[in-house]
Length: 478
Image 1 (spheres, helix red, strand yellow):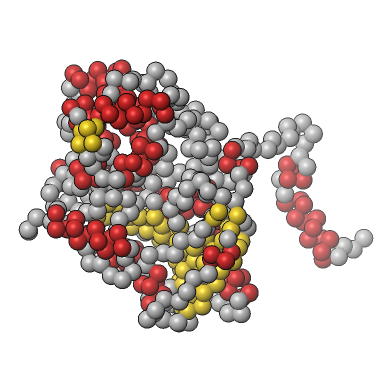
Image 2 (cartoon, helix red, strand yellow; image 1 turned 90 degrees about the vertical axis):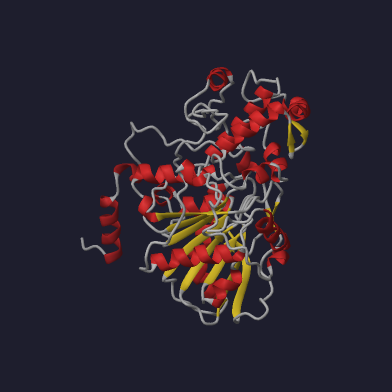
């Protein structure tokens, strides 16, 4: 019997498939579905009317498209004189509301003036859902050419795709270029470079920091935890705060001074801007994370928080004093369930890892006074890169800001351009040493890449705050 070409191809494909893919052996156990979690039952909506965005004044002419894709909203902008390169922007944590929103990148003007197209997704879910952020950003990158065609502008596939992001978006950007993501994501995009800014580069270790801070605060307030999670946090929180601060967060008691010293070491060690950051309003946000059950608001099903590897220190000497030894021996330790954030069969981990398994240029920015996503995230990521043998792909820059993500547009532009020039064959950019304690503690640390020049594209808070910071905490004369 002579087979048609289609039938012959079907038989050849069937023969090439593993037995399990064709139904499997009768003795094979059926594949079990992955577990679900609270996050999976939450519903979110896109307000499509809010997606529209106007053209920038005094900027190159562009096409601007909005719409929805797989439950996410998106914005795309393509200059009429497109350079063939696409920049994906990943926004930060958007809270726990049901309405999804898209954030426009703060370097938008710079991108379109240089000819780059950019695209940004709302993601299909809110909460700290980095998994959704990576998958939905990747899905939008993969759909870019199709969306352009639907809008009557046929485009060739981008010659380069870069990814940038702030805060949780920095976590997304770093995870997106990690080999584990390339291996396990459902929507696979091989980016050519990344700029994670104020990013959660220690992934779940950010939540370990919050827990360690809370447990230390309880210990020195005379309300030591006896079990994790701390179920009575809401009840004891006012007393804990009153024991550590005479005025929160700017004035500490004697016991509060000890907690402040512990937090300094948890967040990156002695460094410029720490005192101002510790006394700043971001502390309200940090304390607002205390009292959780370790599931990160239902992103995990089990406690994923651990403080077992935390070494509490009251000074910069790595050797433990008698008080530090007693503290480390007696303070309650949160212990993560090893299954809480395991690899999954259905795609990325629920909280994707930033393992620093990278082979493309990554340039990071981080402010020194950030208490919410602290500078220690950079140190964790650098140690991972050193352990992986990938540090040649990583450049890190410290910025003299006192809050979370308070970069000027000038600083962000410089980091992005440095990454692109490097990826395009230019020299490896300059960066800061984030691991040497003596270097980080220098009065001029962070001065090299801090640019307090403000423009019309900077937010009012940055435009007002940066000159004040520069005047109050100037870089020492060279």
